[in-house]
Structures are given as structure tokens and as C-alpha cells.
Image (cartoon, rainbow, N blue to C red; front, side, top):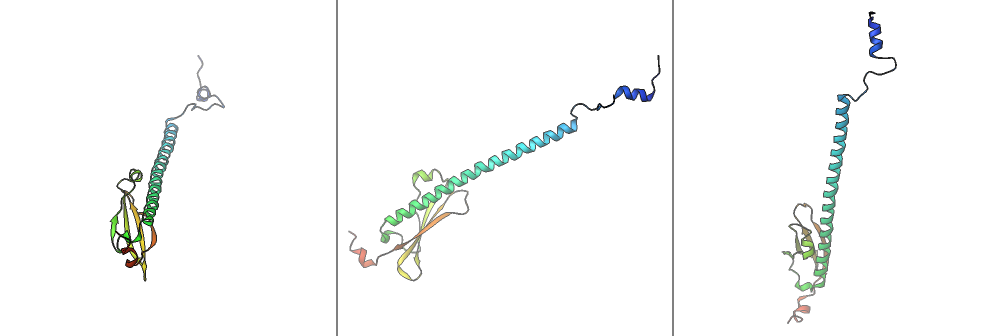
Length: 154
């Protein structure tokens, strides 16, 4: 038998031009899995925020609709029948909007407009559970002097 020199053993173990590591090593596999898991986590987080943002947007749209409907109801009423200045009242939400606003309530606040005696400001605020800033709107009503509407009432 012929004896092999250390240089010959090297040539047999790793032929020239061929890398010794042919498969995926454990470290590469761990890095690839980490990158994939981070990408999945970012995707799930973005999806969750989009769903939550859509729900908030839908609730705000329902609140704006409730404000507009309430202001129209107040405008259609006789101004003398609206609350006296300085009072606050819960005027309720329409049924179709109450389902879309959990814990929702609609409040009317009437206040005088500066120096004008025959003008009143009616402010409507819609609040619901989980929202810190309410949706609101206001209109100015002309309140006739007592002599004009007292005779009109039965």
C-alpha cells in the first residue's frame, strides 16, 4: 500500500473548485426563519390597525350623521319649544345609529348668542364608548319674543 501524505489527504477530502459546505447551515436557517416571522408579525399588525381604523372611521361617520339629523330635528321644531338657555338635555339617537355607536348618547345644549336676545345657539354633541373627542355641531335659532308665540299655543 502506498502511504498518503497530508497534502494528498487534503486533495481527496476537498477537490479543487468545490466548496465543502453544500447545504444550508443551521445559522442560515435561523436567520431566514427570523426574517419570515418578523415579516408575518408586521403584516398582522398592519392588518389589525387597518381593521381598527375602519371601525373608528365608521363610528365617526355614524356620529356625524347623528349630529346632522339632530340639528335638522331641532331646526324643524318651533324655536320656542327648544330648551331654555343654559340647560342640557339628552335627546337620544335614532335607532339605526344607536346600534352603530356603542354606549352612544346625543346631548343638546342651548346658550344665548352674545348680546342678541332673540338668537339662541343650539349645540349638539354625540359621544360614545371609547371615544374621547365627541362629534358636535351647532345652529343659531331665532327665538320670537314671547308675545309672538304665546297666542299661537292652544
